Image 1 (cartoon, rainbow, N blue to C red):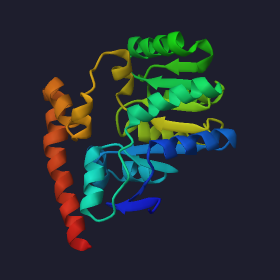
Image 2 (cartoon, rainbow, N blue to C red):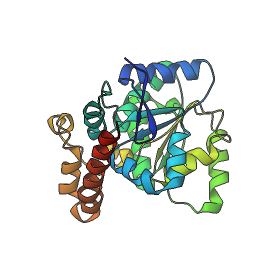
Image 3 (cartoon, rainbow, N blue to C red):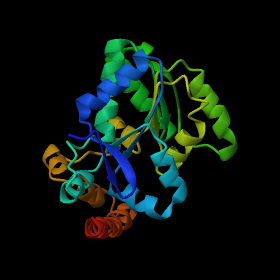
Length: 246
C-alpha cells in the first residue's frame, strides 16, 4: 500500500495510528523535527480558498487524515487510506508515550482555566516531570515570537497547540525554525476542551460511523451549523469534481 495519496492537491500520509507513533518516536530518538498536521473535511474546504492555510498544511512533514469523511473520500476516489488518525487520539497516545519514554510536553492554547485543568490532569496521572510548560491561547501577533522562544527554551520534545484553524497552522509554519529543538509539533484544535471535560466527545459508535460532526453540531448548533452543513456540502462537491477529473 502506498505511503501517501494526493487528495485535492494535498499529500496525505497513508499511516495508521501505530505507524504514526513510530514516526514520532524515531524523530525524538534521532533528535530531528516533524511538523505534523491533521486534515478533515472542513479544513480541506477552507484550504481551497485560503492560500496561506493551504501553504501551511502542505509545508508539514506529516499529514494525517483526522476526519472519517477523508477516509471515505479516499476510498471513493480509488486510493484508500488505512484509517482515520484523529488528532485528539494521537495526542492522548503521545502523552502516554511521553510518560513511558520520559519525554516532556508543552501545552499551548485554550483558556487559562482549561489548559491548567489539562496540566493538572496529566500531572496527577503521569507526574510533574512530563510537563515542560504551558500557556493559554490568547495573545497578540506581536507576542508570537516571544511565545515561540519560550516554548523552544522549555526543553519540550512535543508541542500541542490547541488553537482554532487557521491560527495554529500559521503559528506552527511561521515558527517551526524557532522551534527546531522541539521534535514533534502539532495542532490539536479543541482537544484541551475535551480533556478538561468542557466538551464531551461523541460515543465511539458515532466516531466510527463518521457522525462525530453531528454530535458536535447538536452540542453547539449556533457555532457549528455553518461549518458542518455548508462545509460538508462543499466537501462532497469537491470530491465529486475530483472523481470526474480522474
